[in-house]
Length: 233
Image (tube, rainbow, N blue to C red; front, side):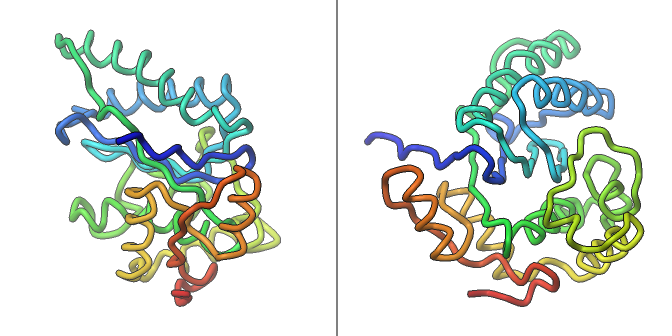
């Protein structure tokens, strides 16, 4: 059976997930995460991808990013595969593959769904039981988005900037957004969209994506209200 083509468009945010092969660790320690982060910054600069949110877990990563070109996400994944895997294998005296063969992705309807995807990503370590609250996890975008910590990897999305007229207002609004856990139906919708490679957004957004691609696309419409996560339509 042929693979379903990925849904990727220039200027449209993408939730990108990549897991270790057989769910094995891709980071052994913080030095591995620092190396990955530095390479990711270089790769995003080279390939024109703007990262809006991220988390580096022990055996997988989540990125919310906007590519300037339709092929930029795949190119970034390949670039990171070459650079990081070589560094990881050299450091840990191993050979062979590190990542699953294919990354997973879902394009995001910014107006309704992007901030819930940010919440979902930043709350990942809490859902996994690693930390009691997002601020306790070092390797995510939460410190930047919620407290203004320096993070040169992050480019603020317009939906985030719309949370307030100043950095302080935006950070306070994002902290409020992240105080409740992402609702189970919202989290489930985000996971299913990534797993199936579907559009996460409204019917109108899916129609727009289909028109740009020249083919119909499937969608999942559970992303929540942009400010409080209550919308499930």
